[in-house]
Image (tube, rainbow, N blue to C red; front, side, top):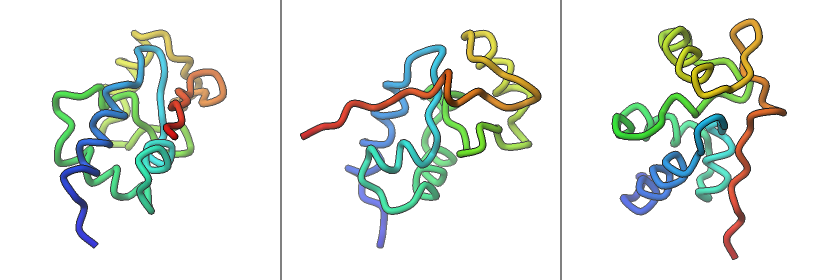
Length: 101
């Protein structure tokens, strides 16, 4: 099934809502957006996130993608996100989205 414009805008709004010093996983965003898979969030982030705080979105392991790792970890560290051995401490830094009724 094709991703709708409304789903894209919902993902964009969720990413934009992650505050500085916090992070979310692709799965967190997919769940909050009502998407069936985190891969859809990854696709949206690859194609439409230049104006968003993309660096605050990580895989479930807390590690950034290898091709972005140095830049992403530097940006997160500048915001005070706890990083140890190239991995974000998700327990300490994970943003929890408000549940909409």
